[in-house]
Every structure is written in structure tokens, then in C-alpha cells.
Image (cartoon, rainbow, N blue to C red; front, side, top):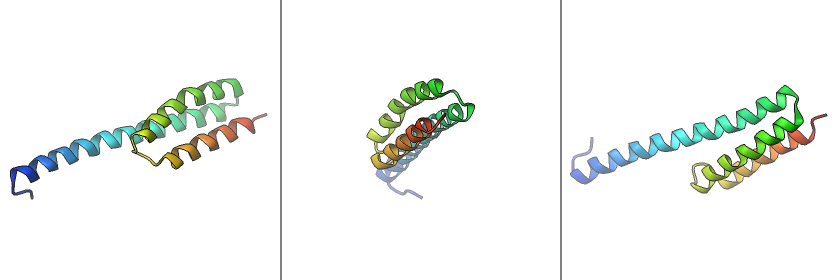
Amino acid sequence: MANSAQARKRARQAEATRKRNASLKSELRTAVKKVAKAIAAGDKTAAAATLRSSQSTIDRIADKKIVHKNAASRAKSRLAQAIKAMP
């Protein structure tokens, strides 16, 4: 347990940051799942539109270094590949 005032404050700040980061990671996973669901539905134009709207969310979270920029890029690339492969 934190014994000094400084350590107590850092513990409070760390908890607040942890919650914020968890929320943003959840937002990222939701954005990816939304595109995957659109792909599974089979409508190529709707899936492409969903990807375009989700890309900004994915990039915003990567800019804040919640996930690595390469991980975000890889997720976007895989979703774009899946849309391109649709009939």
C-alpha cells in the first residue's frame, strides 16, 4: 500500500489511466468487430463504408499509443484484404 501522499496520488492516477486505456482498447475491438460483422453479412459496399468510419477510430487509438501503430495498421490491412476478397 502507498505510504506517502505522492505514492497515493500516483496510485490514483495509475488507476484512472488504466480505466481510460481499457475503455479505448474496448472501443478499438468494437470497431474491428463492427467491420468483421459487416463483412460476414456479405454487403461489400456497406462493409467498405464501415471500414472507412472505423479507420479513424483505430488510428486515433494508435496515435495515443494504446496499441502499437503497427498493430493498428495490421488490423486495418486485414480488414481491407477481407473486403477486397469479397465476391
